[in-house]
Image (cartoon, rainbow, N blue to C red; front, side):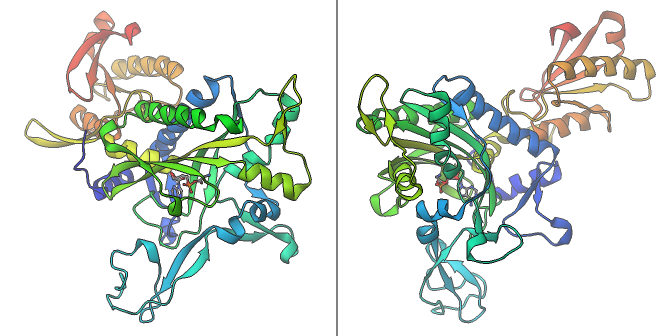
Length: 430
Ligand code: GAP
């Protein structure tokens, strides 16, 4: 595994090869926003699909939902986000720059103009993006871009209970966009203003939260393994009471050794009955769960594994980034696992000016594309060495080359990214 990778190497590769670009770059950019190019979208989807397969498709105690991003403002009042979803903000009296007080390298020195002892007293800055729904902009039409997908799950808890009658424990899962007006977005996609979450709210009997919490610790680690993260680079942090979110009675942050330092990859929180109880009290709707065949009723407690897609993607890129030397030249490659690599196979004719090779290569390309839709790349640009370098950089596990022997005996060259070894295989064997 690569623990020496630098952030600028990742950013540069991501840009150069069409994974991730600065949002609105053509107009000078918009801070904290990122656009995904063809390979970035595929990598991100592969991560999200893996998550969905492991935690929704492969389980019979999990239900998927996809709630609207815009929600009634009462959701965010009841959840505590209107009052407490804040970060401390300080302003430099010299250059007027605004910064997140708890993220300053030196709490007395402005990182922009370098002046010292110029910060204002910290003010609490609410990170939700506020907007108005409909043509009248007044207090009644206020809404927010959701800062977490979780509330779209809690507000649908009763719908699922009333339509699917699940036994406890059961979970609701959602993948989707979240928005936070971060004071200091930074470190590539790590701290963005628009990002994606993969969240589960797992509803449990209040007396049994501990065993579910332990279960989800194990499941989170299983997901990190499936992402191919080096376990020695993932760390568990028991978050002290004062640092926990307002709703949490216990939180473990899983941290990763990013090039920017050890930082939060995802969080696992015991949210108690905080959210359902707030909905119960504020909506007038009964959120109690009745145990089948008994009179026992209670508001379920919740274990929440909350994953950020961008942070998972950044951990995957950092873990898989490699440099070595091939024939005296530096080579960069991404050692992505087969199920995450945006391109599973690249297919090339050895020479692009030989119609018989191109025709055969097109056949192979078409049949592989049926097996791996959207994940096979046609690549006939430049000489074969350049094609291999390009495919190495985007993490393609194998390149398939059609040459004159293919026409004779139906075999192709399959070149392995990590070892750079080439083997001949019968086309049907791939
Ligand atoms: N529902 C719980 C919740 O939202 P959180 O710890 O605030 O908890 C969960 O966020 C995850 O979302 C984080 O662990 C991180 O992976 C991701 N995340 C949070 N803020 C982010 C940001 N500004 N940019 C990218 N990812 C972010």
